[in-house]
Image 1 (cartoon, protein in one colour):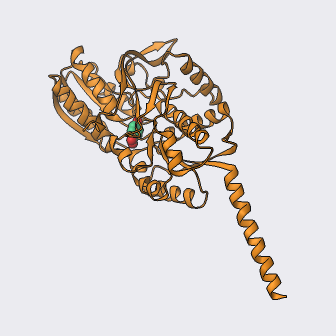
Image 2 (cartoon, protein in one colour):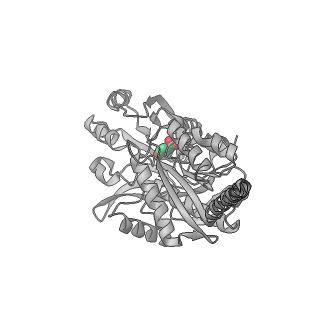
Image 3 (tube, helix red, strand yellow):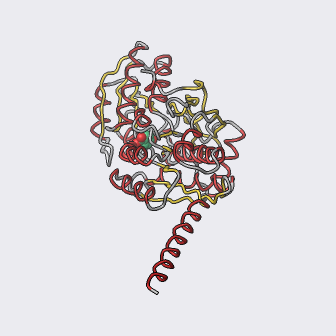
Length: 388
Ligand code: PHB
């Protein structure tokens, strides 16, 4: 009697286990970890909206499996990102980890990707070295060196020879400073000083005063997406523009998410970046219109595009590998070539990093709205950080 009961219990347990496995196999789970609250919440909002748009446009099944997007808020704290990633891999059995709004969040999670052999798609963070932190990392955002070198080539040919750099004091800021400085000096320019501001809640005023006192032709700026508005405001309030000091930078400062709210001070600012919402292509026009329609008129920024393209890379890899995960899925992500709303792009199979055009853009009013208007293109830019 007891033995029969025992056997039945085993049979039930086995069935339950296989049912869960079947259920897991019927789903293709993507763990999307983003800062949804705090100072970098705009990055989370943009990327989540873009991922949902991609799914709405391309269907919620891939390789015969139902796509499940699991969105988690890491509050931009690295230990939280790492813990969430671990839970998503162990409990949810996600096929892909994606998102990563800031460099420290991606770096903290890299070991989880390596240990669990889970592809990790960086949709936002942009320090060059991130892709070297795990062989399972793929990037669809950009790298700071890509953008920084382009503006350092443009500046000295346009009357800007003496520059002070002002960057957020962490990975992407250090990259932005180094690659700009080395290139400007190589091009015969001069860097009068290199200023670094805290990454969180920075008070830009004393730094901008220092810039004013140094009287450069321009201040070159990098601050992460979402927090550029107070810098712009204080740049005007301290009278740097009136003193004839120009503001240049990577496109993070004139981020499409906040550009229109910056007002007149942003008008005319020249930056280098891989994406502008006003990029002139049929695909981009369609993307921007659909994004705005689905999000109460919110304009997509470069974070949204990193998220949208990341979903493309994941979907196509899932199709090619019929929904299997791990190394095969990663391999199918490598080398993808496609047209993005930003223009042509591909994932370099060797470095797993993004290769795309960098555009030089000037803020201009178009139908009463401020946009980064692209006026020069540097084609197929690889991450200069990988050339060494
Ligand atoms: C980063 O932390 O890597 C990062 C964040 C926002 C940006 C660029 C880089 O705009």
